Length: 524
Image (cartoon, rainbow, N blue to C red):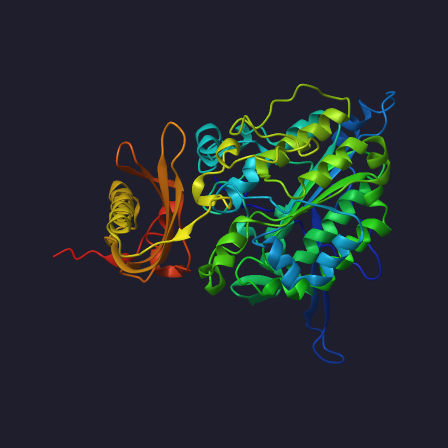
């Protein structure tokens, strides 16, 4: 169960001016320079330590690529996915104006209606990479069970089987998408995998934290390692097709203003994509999973919208645009249409089918109605049709109502009871001698309602923000009231709008941490 937490650093080899790396060094290496403490001193101390990730040719990958070369087809379109955690479309424009302006000035396609399908990173990325929603992913390839993630039909497997080189890199090892409260991979998931370098670098280099994340690692921003790795990967395979996912958390996850610190650096990397010729042969998806999910701005109406509407920009090479004017037209139309991660999953499979190397790939299993954004999206598309639950949907027309009304009180009582029943069912999942306090209703911050009187099953949706006691947790829930049955149900999941930090350390079930206020149990 430690397979994705282990790394190995070889014996230190001394050299003076230069050193030829053996072919066996695949992932990366550490360099440490030592100097005398004083002139004439025999004792030496380290004055410089740094880590360098490598993207070197892998014989088995070259062999796999070679099986597809020499065919009559044109070189397939490569795919580079560059993701930044927790940035809404509006916050990209606000906090990273140079980056945003570059995208608008240079002909990238934007998806202004790109709507997340679940709460946090894992389910939104799994929808892209597998076409599965959270419950299906946990049932088929439970990431909490050792070796189960390998059972998922990740897109990089499809690309590898079609003669593409693959890569995956992410910063901040402790909160990596497939490792945070999860077991990670037993078998290296892609041809080039950054995590062993990340673990070694974090252990051996100096760190500078910002908002509890490793902003600087050694002599550069942690995110720089990821973007440099992406450039190295694309350059290494510039003559071959490739698929790579490069994800960063450290300058965006915990504060709405932090992305501004990387604005010019991000623009530099986007420029590098062009300067190094990467944009000539690659579809580049520059995107986020969701907006910021907690903090003061999240309490505003714009915060509600921004959490649900991450940024998403797509680049296509000029030759591809000329060959497929219908795709260019569709992307222009889809700019203002409702899209989601399942559509992106279908689009990436569409890219693979256009290579001519594979056909009839299955669509996203959790959203049969979702489609490639290379085709025109219907203007009247709804969240219900595209597997976006009401709690995450930005299309609903919510109107303010009396927050102390009978229906609001009934709906909130249902939410509180729902949470307490869930905590009670998992009372044995806490640290011994600790238990989660029973949640009680505190202040009611906001109440809104959206009516859906038409159809076979008329219902009202209530959007509720309230405070829980003890602990001062601020929660948001969308509760559906089925009018014909006079029954309530939770849509999506209940959101926590403020940080809970160490309040919930005793709870070992990931999704219950946001509800749990740990209290020591009195034994006598």
